[in-house]
Amino acid sequence: MSLCLDVQKQLANFTLDIKLTCEPGTLTAIVGPSGAGKSTLVRIIAGLTRPDSGQVKLHDTVWSDSTAKTFLPPQKRGLGLVFQDYTLFPHLTVRKNVAFAAREDVDIDALLKQFSIAHIAEQKPANISGGERQRAAFCQALARKPVLLLLDEPFSALDIATREALRTELKNQKGHWDIPIVHVTHDLEEAFYLADRIVAVENGHHSPFWLKRQLAHRDPRQNLQNRYSTKDDVCFDLLA
Ligand SMILES: Nc1ncnc2c1ncn2[C@@H]1O[C@H](COP(=O)(O)OP(=O)(O)OP(=O)(O)O)[C@@H](O)[C@H]1O
Image 1 (tube, helix red, strand yellow):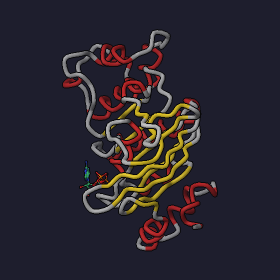
Image 2 (cartoon, helix red, strand yellow):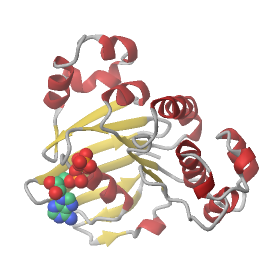
Image 3 (cartoon, protein in one colour):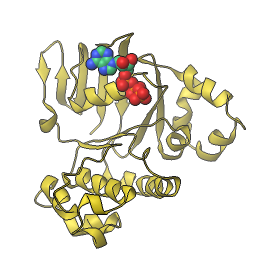
Image 4 (spheres, protein in one colour):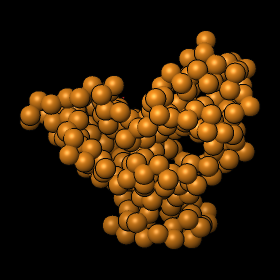
């Protein structure tokens, strides 16, 4: 089921105005400078912020429509969220954290194994590493069998080696989940590595030129494109 949105929201200094479609089994990376509106966009998709106008739909289910005055609260959208800050309950073990969110038919042990944290299932979050906590956060998000996965800088608090390991796992697994994934990141390398499509946002608007400017300032310029852009789609912003 595809995510389709066309939303507007007045922010402090500009109006966020974004149109986006994200297909199941694909990862759309949202990149852009600080304050561009990326987190606001994630919050609108999650139902944590109401847009002033426009519509958010998952296939034919309307999550938000300002004209029809429809607004589905976050808990009814059935999505999985992974943020930079760990969303685990500190007083529960890893297994209980995942079980808390899980649908009945989910095999929690298999999920923990898939994310290589079966051996720490009985530990509490304070006793495991940052990378393990983020793995647990992914298990928690996926245990609810989400219709959409929303990732807001999920790797930015991790050290380089852990970040790279988790990126690789996400890249290998994302196609199997068969849901749209929206991934906000500051890191262009991460976006090029993971994304099926990159959408650059600047001052609340889709801005292919921001991405072009960033790449123009990189050294050497061609590296990211040559290494990761085997698919034309990823580069659609560069072709604009
Ligand atoms: N509820 C709000 N009402 C008005 N303005 C807001 C609101 N929330 C955020 N803003 C402003 O909107 C702009 C976009 O913020 P947002 O957090 O979405 O940007 P971002 O691209 O995620 O930034 P960063 O990469 O630094 O996290 C900022 O100027 C912020 O101050």
